[in-house]
Image (cartoon, rainbow, N blue to C red; front, side, top):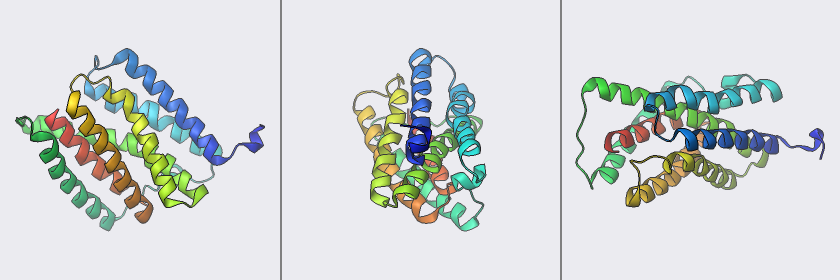
Length: 214
C-alpha cells in the first residue's frame, strides 16, 4: 500500500496508536512514582496534544482550533458547566458511598480542579476532537463512530487504570464501566453540538470527582 492509498482515518488511527504506545511505555515505567501534576500538566499534554497539533499542521489545511471544534460559545459553555456539575454530583454519589469523603482545603481543591481541567483537555483533544471528529467525518455514521471512539477512549485509559495503586477491586470495575458510559454520552453531545468545550467541561467535573474520592 502506498501513501496515496492510506485513508485519512487510517492515518489518524496510526497517529493515535503511536500516542497510546508512547503513553503505555511511560506509564509502565513511571507508574505513580511522579507527582500527579507532572503527569497531567506536562507528560500528558506532550504525549497527547503535540502529535495532534503536528498531524493537523502536516496533513490538514484547517487550523488547530477548527480542526478540533474548539469554539467560544456562551450557550455551549453554560450547557457544559451545567452537565458537568450534574456529573460531579452523580460521580460523588456513585464512588463516595463506600468511603467517607474528607474534603481537603480550598487551595488543594482549586489545585485538583485545575489539574482535572488540564487532564480533560488533553484527553478530549485526542479522543473527541481528533479521533471521533475524523471517524464521523469519513463514515457519517454516528453510532459506529461513537462506539469505535469510545472503545479507543477505553483503551487509552487502560495504562492509567492498571498502574494506579488507588484504584482496584470493585472500584476499578466501577471506574471502567463509568468511563465507557460517560464516553458514549459525551461523544453524542459533541457530535450534536460540534463544540469540544462541552466534553472538556463534563470530563473535568468527572475527573475532579475521582480526585476527591480516590
